[in-house]
Image (cartoon, rainbow, N blue to C red):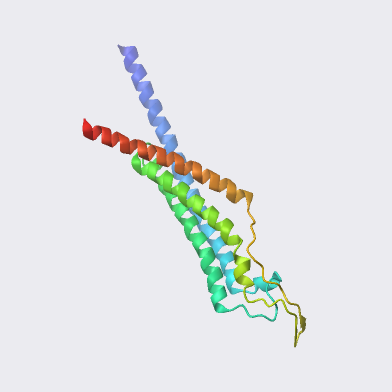
Length: 204
């Protein structure tokens, strides 16, 4: 009997120690994720601002030097990348929500599964948006290009052609999108499991 009591106490201590390590790790990752979120937002909004409201497109030599980048084009470019930033921020939010659930000891709860599912979903949407919109920004930027050279006060301004949709992808985006699919699938399966469990309990 004393041996059984000692074994039970040992298991309880091991369980508490494991829970402590999980919560500590989740808290550290939570703080690191918040810091990285702010850093990512700063980098992403800086890029969106530079490509929309500065002469970066002229320096890339895809817009004709004598052609003015109109306000609707600038707004369209900025709005395009704001959508990606919003989707990425949503993924960060649900990732933080997942870590908060782990920090609170909610390991196998419906709220945790919901956070996993939505984290994966918005991660996929953000990466797909980043890939698709990257093929559209040059289309919008060169919409008013005439392709004709023009003599200006500063000399000859070479014409630039209109750049149609092109498909380019970042392997990192594809990898993150596949990871997002995995997270969504895991969260969906566990959430459906909780739903079926509740239905079975209601029949008892």
